[in-house]
Image 1 (cartoon, rainbow, N blue to C red):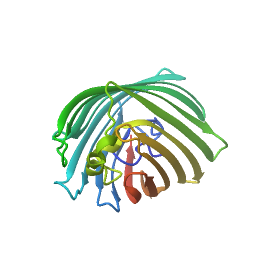
Image 2 (cartoon, helix red, strand yellow):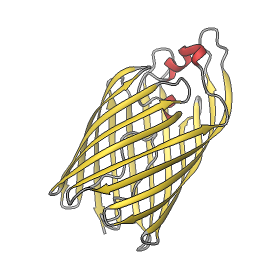
Image 3 (cartoon, rainbow, N blue to C red):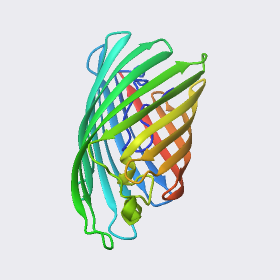
Length: 279
């Protein structure tokens, strides 16, 4: 068993482990943390031919702030995946953000090689941002338009019939210097939660996942790290996920994790996702 949508809606959708589930996959879920951040997601994937699949997702996250009204972040993506066996390509378009503060439009592409229980993908992402930094204290506020290029790799290796390992990372090069260390109040305003907008402005991110299949059930342990491009904040997270059948053609996944940030401290988060498969 394998869930293809991980955690919050502001991360890059990756992987094609849903491809053996049938002609379509529909699902949704919610994640919440102890900083009153909530993210709700709906997604779908459909086979439009034997070798081509179309997937999309919509999501919304809400974060309460003490210094201003909360952020409501919207997310939407559309991706097309085509396999030449063993090679494949994936291209997609992504929007996310709060139009009053920070939003991004961009596209992404991946080329991958997959055979049996091994796959390797090279990833590229272009993001075009508009950042309306609010006035805080003596800082008057300003609007910054900038873009970023991201490069990354993902590797999946089956270590046996029931154990697998995944690892990968992404590094971004921004067209402007986003550092605001001279006024940490801005960063604190935007970063009260792991779901906050500013946590999407990363310098780099990396993850390692260990999966264990137990008949129709699956356990996953995820370890990840990221460094913010705005304030240099580093955050590390550990997440345990459990996937189990909900019915003959559906699964439910529970996730529990801890996020340790140099900026907003420790955060505990919990998620529930459901998946429906059909032909």
